[in-house]
Length: 222
View 1: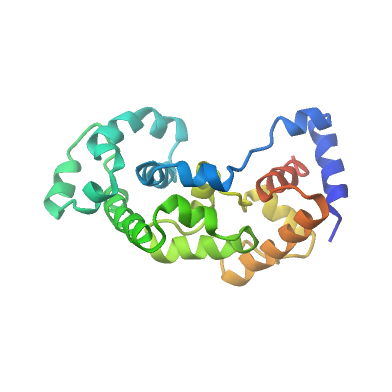
View 2: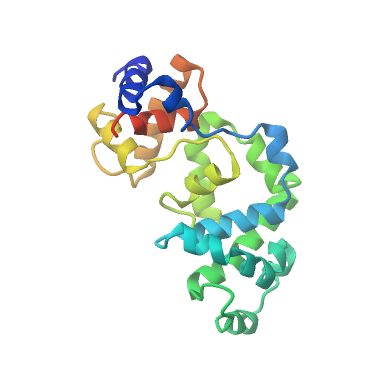
């Protein structure tokens, strides 16, 4: 596997300069910042990520103020208490995107967020305290305990809220294949953990957070 220094040099060449590459890098929130975010905001971003899947992000984001109204600003208790009749009524509300599975996921994920509240005090504390050295384990947990958070959705949600994570984008996967880390599109836990080992090695080499490494690896391709 190539050193991170080699990958970084290639990414700088592709983007034209170190300054241009640096301008593209995402930033992770600190533990304190993660803990200061209220649980309704986590449920909102979780839901927005789910509704974005398969749709243009701009279209979903434009309608999001309507979602905030309909779902009581994503208060976890209110959303978890939605009845089947409430869900049926919401399917006729033009302020939201009327996708039954995704609307039901709001209710299911509200229950998930409330369960985490009871176990850890808040969803922000849960994310802040999860070790970045096992970020793939957090992806797997989100898939198991949440709804419609499998595939890349769990990691994309974490990136949205500022939890340090890498993403298995098309370009990142291409690099991991080239480096012999994985052999195919990652779908099994062993692939996620193999990718994690590579990123942790690059993290040790560079001292950078996973989110920056992920974008740099992606930029080394295009």
